[in-house]
Length: 371
Image (cartoon, rainbow, N blue to C red; front, side, top):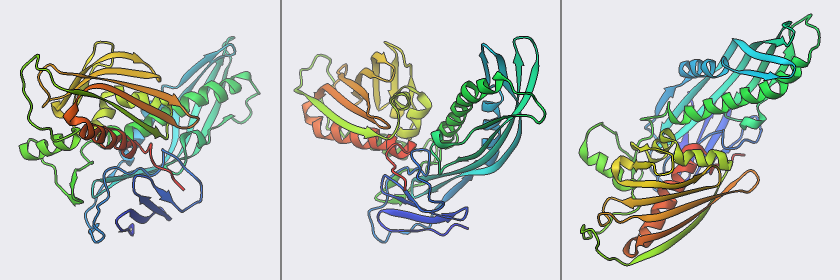
């Protein structure tokens, strides 16, 4: 059984023979001593402020069976072609390991560790077939996805062939992409319903279709508890501009996907969302509390959208531009917004910083520095 203790800033414990600690919005680990990044232990939700808050409540979900099926479904379709011929994965011959997720006081901690062996077949342009193996010994929450080892070999007595090089290059890249998708879906699809809201550090059980708690969730996700304003279309109100900047420990490609993928939006907002990630496409987030429209989309570079909170005067939208800049292993996001009700300036800034930026970091680990 894990041993865990907590203060106002940390959750500590032992898992699979190694010590684990998660502190604040980041995380630390002592164990096999290998540094990790956003694919490691991930923290979701706020840590209680009280120095005496008990950490007795925990929800644990075994993700091993789901992971086994998900990994097979992602790895078996791998196929690559080149001048030499074609290579494809034909069998997942070994898939040993485990995966689980712990929820403590609204904080999710992910554990996964897999040793995988695949069989592959290559077919040359002349029709000659070659067989080989792919071994992946360390798909683990301790390793960044780019650190995961992928060893490609030919079966015993097979003659050397350029198809092995094709599999080591293009094939290994597709296999790495498949594992990356597994980790992403583990954090989104499988965790639905595990992220529970907290109020002043106290755990709240969520029950579907209970209006008061749904309203709490909407209000927590909104940029503010807005003051009542006129609903008349055409009413003139003072507006302001907002500028925010933050850094995320991921690539521009991955961070851009978070904002335009429905399942990922639902994960970091902890609420239902619908969106059409196309120019002119509509979106509705946080159970309808936020609505808007995509004005322009430049993958990995920029998102422009019309955005409004439901308590604003009817028909009034702010315009938000998100610019993504690659900073070499990190991504800087600059938010430029105009047309926000002046009375909502500070609350809106705080809402975006806390419920968007911090929510994304905590849900997907993009703010966690692991040691």
